[in-house]
Length: 408
Image (tube, rainbow, N blue to C red; front, side, top):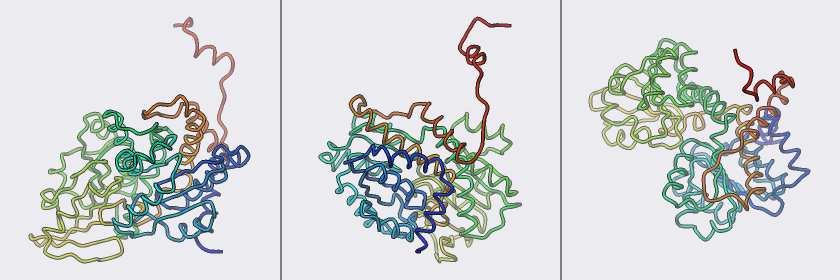
């Protein structure tokens, strides 16, 4: 049996919640006669989601949402299914990336699952005719949701979209625990550097930044946080981290990790301030947080030191290192989030697709969140799958929480 299939089997054993949804879908066939197009990281966990949708009656087309995140053995194994079409390979060019995206659009999806909003953007601009047959879609990541809300505000959102990233079981688990562990995994695989005793600078203290800072501190790093949001900066201070502007943090850091979802976080002027041997990594969705192009333009010399680790010699004589071309280090240099975490996120995607089908007549061209009870259901499924039990409210407790008469 090939390695891709074995990897998918291993993922299934850790994704009990999603496997429960898959079993129900196999009986009820909520997507019978529908096509679902996805732009996601082609990993073993994504493969389990794809097969869940397939078992629900859908034909599925999948392309990568990042040029370096495809697990080739999984892509080959998944493509062996007659109802699944897979487009992507690790290291694809920008030209190939958009060609594969177009293949998913040409598939004629009725539902789209996006990670970063590139599919929806294409349907809102150059593929408006194809958008007319789309019931709606789901978005996986913070950056994509930001883009969707901007589209809604401008009145150009082509169909209803569900922000799966808003689920507590997504952003509080995937972003915090998943990004924290997988980012560190990617950095260690790319560099094998010692974390303990080093000064690490984390740019951004949203859910992803919190997870990265927590894991770096757990490995013994002295962590500095940079932020533009006063409340998040205050949270970082209360969590025991040092908070500085980036220009003050730049000369101090041995390791920099960007997780902001914004552009120009580590610019060439900032990089000129860094010490010899500084390591730069990104875990934000797009490769725009670290100005690798600008750095390449000013560097006297560049060379690959290890897979996914490139050395840049600056005019000052100092060397700095960029991991994974400034792309998602956790997926380019490692394997992304653990399967247990993605089980929760992909339960959200699967149930959101079902929600779109059931409510297509009432949903309008807006960005929606899934109802709280569905989020609760996902958590319950994962607790059940992992063998944990919780208490339940008594009738008296329910009455007390729903009343106002009882006081001091």
